[in-house]
Image 1 (cartoon, rainbow, N blue to C red):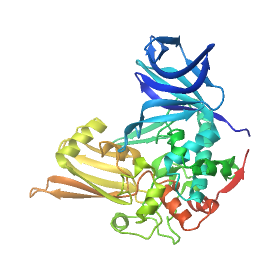
Image 2 (image 1 turned 45 degrees about the horizontal axis):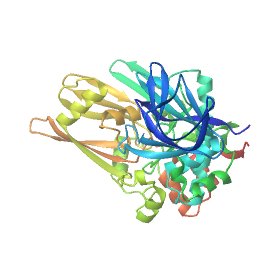
Image 3 (image 1 turned 90 degrees about the vertical axis):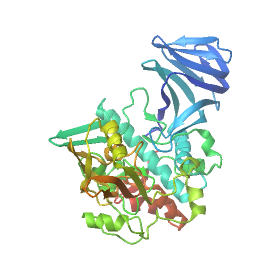
Image 4 (image 1 turned 120 degrees about the vertical axis):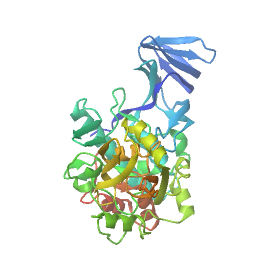
Length: 439
C-alpha cells in the first residue's frame, strides 16, 4: 500500500474563521499570504484580507502549499464538550480548505499526509517528553486506528456514527467515530487529537513516527482498530461494553500490570476494586513522570486513577432533564445493572418518582451524569438520604479516565519507563497481534 493523504477537520461549524498564511499559498491563479478571515455567504465561502477586503468568493476554497509553508488558525476550540475544553492558536503544515457546513457556518480542513499527521497526533495526545518506546507504540497504534477507520468508513457507505436501541424501559446508545461528511477525521478527542506542528517542538514525536513509518498492528491479516484511552484504572475493558455487541479479541480485558488481576464480575467486586489502590501501571504517583507523559492540556486532571464527584439531588435531577430530555421527578436511585470486566457500567437504571429507565452504553452514561463527561463509567454510587429515605446527595466514586478499551496511555508510558519495548507494550494491550510494515 502507498502512504495515504487525509483530510482533517480543524474548525467545524464556525461562523467565522480567522488565521494567517505563513508563506505563499496559491488558489484560483492567486498567490496569498498574511492574515485572513473566512466567512460563509449564501452557500459560498468568502475570503477577506487583513484590511477586510474581499479576496475570493467560491463554493469551496482550496489554498495549496507549494512546499513547507504553514498556516495558523486563531481561536481553535480543543476538548470539545469535554471537561478540559478551551481555545488556542494552532499552526499546521499542508493545504488548507474552507467549505460551507450548513446553517451559516463553515469548516476549515487540513489536507496532509498520514505520516505528517501522525507527528502532530502523537505529540498532541501525549507529551513529546514521554518515554521514547511509548511514543513509538503510540505512533503504531494511532496509524493503525486511522487506516482501519478509513477503510471501515468506506465500507459503511454513509452509515451514521450513532446507534440507538430502544426497548421497553431501556435506551442504549453508542457512538463510533464522528459522522464526518466533509473530511475524514476531526482534530479533537472524538477522533484523535491533532493540534498542529507547535506540539512537535522537541522532535521526539516526529522521530518516533519516522522510526515506525508504515508499521501497523495486525490481527489475522487485517489492520487493527487500535483504540486507546488515557487511563484504564487498572483493568482494560471489552470492546462490547462501549460499542457494538460483538467480541473483538485484541480489544478485550487485560490487567494493566505485570501480574494478572481477575475481571470484575459482581457489584461487590466493583466496590472493592474502585475503593482500592491496586499496584498497576497507570496508578503512578511519580509527578515528574506524569509531567513528562501528559501534555499541558491534561496536567490539570490529577485525579484520573481514582476520583469522586458529588451532586445534590436537585442538581442531578436538573442535569438529567437537560441531558436526557426526560423528567425523572424526584430521583430515588442510580443502580448499575451490567458492568464490564474493568468495572465500567454498560447499563444503569435511573429511578425517579415520574420515570424509570435503564440507559447505556458507557459514553451515554458519562454524558447524562455530568455537565460535560464523567471521567469514566467505572463508578459506584453512594446516596445520602433524609429520615424519610429520600436522597439528599449522590456521590460517585470512580476509577480511570476514558472508555478503557485497548491501549492505556498512562499505563503504556509507565511500562516504557520501566524498560518495556514498543512491541511488548502493544502486545500487552492488544493480545494476539503482530507488527507488520506495509509501506
